Image 1 (cartoon, rainbow, N blue to C red):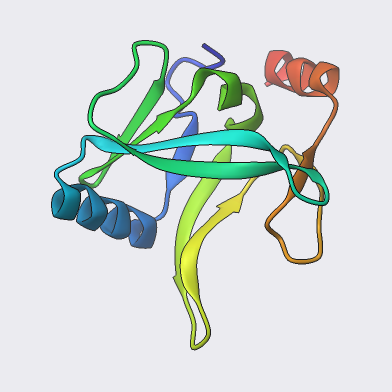
Image 2: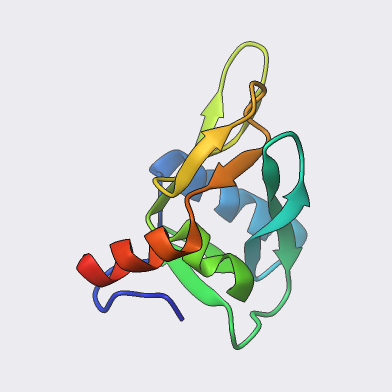
Length: 126
C-alpha cells in the first residue's frame, strides 16, 4: 500500500527475527501482525498479534525465518521502522525504532506520530 519498490516496509533485527521465528514455531502461527490502536498518554500504541493467515491487504515482510504482517491502517505510520528484540536484567521485549514518531510518553509504551500530511510528503520525496 505505502511501499517503495525495492525497499521493505520495516526492517527486523537478527534478535527480533530469532524471537519471531521462535514464537511462530512454538505456536504454529504464520507470523505476527503489527498494528496500532488508540490509547496511552501520547495517543497511540503498537499492537502485536499472532496470525494464522495473512490478510490480502497486509504488507508482509519476511526475514531470516520471521514473518511480520503490517495491518493496512498502520502501514503508513510504520514505514521505515526497525523492529528489535532486547533483553536486559529487568525486562525483555520488542522495541520499535520508528522515524515517524514525533513524541512518546515517559514509559515508552505510547507514541504520537508526525502529521499525516508531513508523512505523505516525506514518502514522495524519498
